[in-house]
Each structure stands twice: as C-alpha cells, then as structure tokens.
Amino acid sequence: MINENIRHGDLEEVVDSLISVDEFEPKTGKKEDVSVIGFHVTEEKVGADLKNFLQKSHFDFRDVEVTPNPNEDNMYMVFVEVDRKEGLLSELREYVLDLENVSGKINWKVKPLLSDDTYDLSDPILDEYVISDPDKYKTKEEFEKDKETKKNESIENFLIDNAIIQDAVLENNILTLKAHKYNVQLEFVQFGEGKVTLEEAGISEAAIDYDWDKSLVKTLEGMRGNLNIIPINKHIVFHSPATDQVLIAKPC
Image (cartoon, rainbow, N blue to C red; front, side):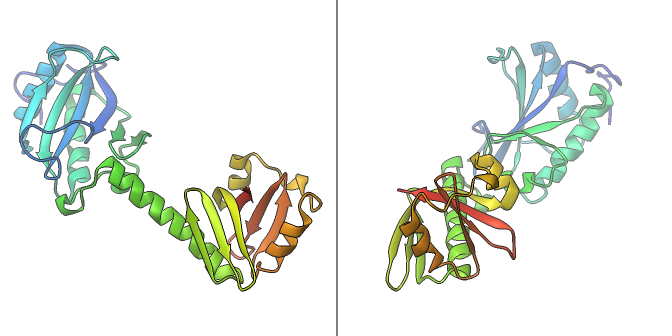
C-alpha cells in the first residue's frame, strides 16, 4: 500500500538492505514482550519519510521512531517496535514487501541479536535466532549458554552411543572418557561432519601417524566400539562410519 505522501520508487537507493532485529532496547515495553526492528537509511529526511509510510500502512506497530543522529556507519535508523508474538518473521516479510513499493526490490539481510552473522530474510534459520514467543525469550548470554549445553550433550551422546565407555563428559573444553579400567582426558578440538570438520580443524587424512603416542592410541582402540580411532597430526580423530561424523581431540 503506497500512502498519499510517498510515491512508487521515492525511496529507491536510500534504504539499506540490512535489518536489525532485537539488537536495541524497546521503549514501549519489556524486551521479552516487544521486538525492535531497525531499518537503515541514508538521511534523516528519508527516515522521516519511511516513518510516515509505515505509520500510514495497515500494519499495527507499537511505535516508530527515527534516530536524530547517524550511527558509526553514517546511517540513520528507523526503529519499529512490535509485539513479540507468533508469526513475527512472517509479518516482517510482509512489511518489506509493502516497503518495496517505494524502495524498489531489495535483497534484504537480517542481523538478529542472537547471532553474529547476517542472513537472507527468507532463510529458515532465522526461526532459530528470532524468538517470537515471549515466554521463550532469551538474552544472547542465555542463548549461547543453552547452545553450548546442547552441543556438549550431542558430543557426549556421540561417544556414549558408539564407544565402549561408561560415560563421557565435556566440560571447559576437556573431554573425559570413563571406561572400566581407564579414565582418559583429552582436549576437545571440533565435532561435526567428516570432511568439512577435518578441513576446519586444519588437519589432513593423509597425515595419519600411529607412532607419536602408541600407548594412548592403544587405550582408545580398546574403547572404540563402533568408531574408528585415527591419529592424525598429533590429534585423535573419532570417526563414525555410520554417520560420517568426526570428533577431533588431542592430548591435554
């Protein structure tokens, strides 16, 4: 819907593609209940035009405000406060479709509070990083802690389900493997899909070397169960042939 003051194409090349979500504190309520969506524009006047356009649209906003000064990137921001509720991302996609009537087609990117990366507005991964349920709202610190806990649990379960051990504990980057006769500690390096994870860790399958710590390799071989134990470049690689997942560690 184009309002009477702004015509088709009036905001072309003055609205940036980057959208901020939840990176700023709301003024109309608690952050658990209110999401702050930030658009970036080149001038304060453009911000005023965008504010006017949004306020005259059919969408229900709690508040729309333009910053009086540019940020460090010399961009002005238009903050839109909306209720945090189911369908938040769907509504955001509707906002920008409406906005494109005056801004032209834009390849929108979203920078959510809970991630250091930006994503295409259409990317399904945003459902993980943009919380729409007030009861499930988390700060970035809480989100990162939960994410780390889930990661540790998946690593521990990978070993418990596949190796002949009684327990596996990953804490403070130290992996402890508990078996009937042994208690082995290793420094955790990386976990994930085989080839990609080996490349990210900077080690090569061509550098297999069984001679550097025969005693440790022999001990781990006795625990391996369904896993392959591969010593590579002073690292130990636990490889699951069934899933092609690898866990990379090294002696403490």
